[in-house]
Amino acid sequence: MDQLLVGHYVAVNIEEWSNQPLIGQVEKIGQPMVTIHWLDGSYNGTFRDSYVGSGANRKPRTENIDKSQIVMIGVQFSNSRTIRREDIEERKTRYSILDNEE
Image 1 (cartoon, rainbow, N blue to C red):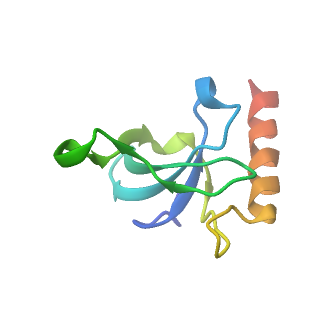
Image 2 (cartoon, rainbow, N blue to C red):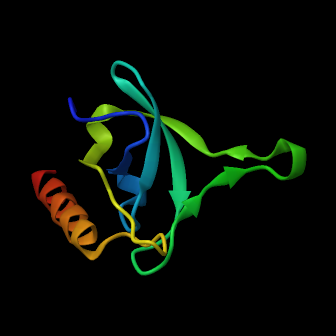
C-alpha cells in the first residue's frame, strides 16, 4: 500500500458486492482506513461519480474502508470513461485469487 496516493482510482473487494466492479477514488489516507469516493459503472459501461441525495442535499457518496479491502491501485480509464480491458482482466484475476483463498 506504499504506492497508494490521494487521487488514485482503486478496485475494492467487499464480499457482498463481489458480482460488480467496485471502483473508487482515494480522498483521504489514514491508518488503517481510507476514504473512498465511489464511482457508479459496470465492466462494459462507463463510470461516473456517485452521489447521494438531491438538490442542495446532493453530496459525493463516500465511505471509509480498510486498506486491506483494496485489491488494485491505479485503475485507469479510457477517454470514454470505461475501464481499460487490461485493468478489467487484472481485477478479475485478483478477485478470483481472493475467492480461492477464502
